[in-house]
Image (cartoon, rainbow, N blue to C red):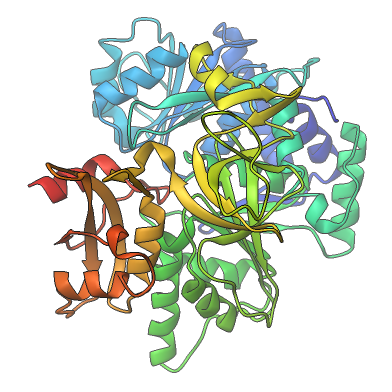
Length: 539
């Protein structure tokens, strides 16, 4: 496996194709030459400020070129990036920065007020860099001033064992840092990069650059639209996998997901792949497509070759609607996690009817384990178990060896990533996803997974989105509660939702209580917030 720091790989790409577009955000286009130069100048500033090997550089920003520049700069000095959810309040940000030991923070001026609250509790923050304002807060330096005061940092030797921290979770507990080595992340992303293009994985930075140039010459260089914000692992890692192929990363410039902007960019930039997070993104995209069709026009999506979804359910109905309007696109729906994967994949080719929602195919690395005995469950047994995957994966959780040993288990001499998703796998390798065990509902001794309830409810035409949670019950311990958002003008009521769910899953799995809300609250990455959903059903 290639054993290099990502900055070293990107430097090789910048040398090989300096004038190729690396990043598009709104109307702004940035070449690899400019990206490398600006990252090198910021790296020089960080280096002179004492930020070096294994230091932690936190990022609190909306999508912007500076997000990718500062990540590149951190890698150049062998520091680790730390993603911070921009919806967090001051106490949550303090937790992430304290837990990670961050000593530098690159933040957008829009967050100046919350950063001022954070600084009171973070004396160890010695470098504050503010993006978007020439007159930064006291104690911070303006991003562009840091650039203008610096020279491109000379390149240094680095290692594939250098790491980055990806903070994840927060829906059922405090965010936790997943430690990825650059070597391990390269191995994991090779699946969505070289393998799907039918290419051998390069073994040196020079080979990485050569493959990228060849892809561009043959017209196969990827142009990837990452719809979720970069602070989410799905977007950042897919951006990395695009970069390593020498491709172009296309980003939304708005601060909220705008399907019209996304589809306009796909059309204008001839995007070859969009990356989304399940129906939370797919449904607004489809609604925008239908809106312009009502006006007698359509978006030109002929360039679109792949639609990739991970992190949340992408229903068969959404797949059909997307594929009907992008006839050249393959839909790749993956069960992945910040902790590794993919654990299973559903690939739908152009002209092929999508399989049932939440059904995937096992990969060669997929295993199903009994979560008590830790014995392998044979495919086709009909038994549910916890999904696991071998292969490239993180080193573990930052500062938490106990949780690391629970999630990354060595069984019979093989290390597996087991983040907690449950499934049933048929004899032919078909995976039926049941959901995350940590939010599993135990009703009278029966296990009910939120995912299967949500999939059943969302198949109703008038259900826009929903989240299932367990509610306390004197008789059964827990019953299923469902928070639902409806289409405009819908009169759908609780009885109708329950009856519809019972058409596709066992009666005991159906919700006993349904609460309607104007909109389902999700993180910017599309993930459900189960704590919020419980508050809605308990009020």
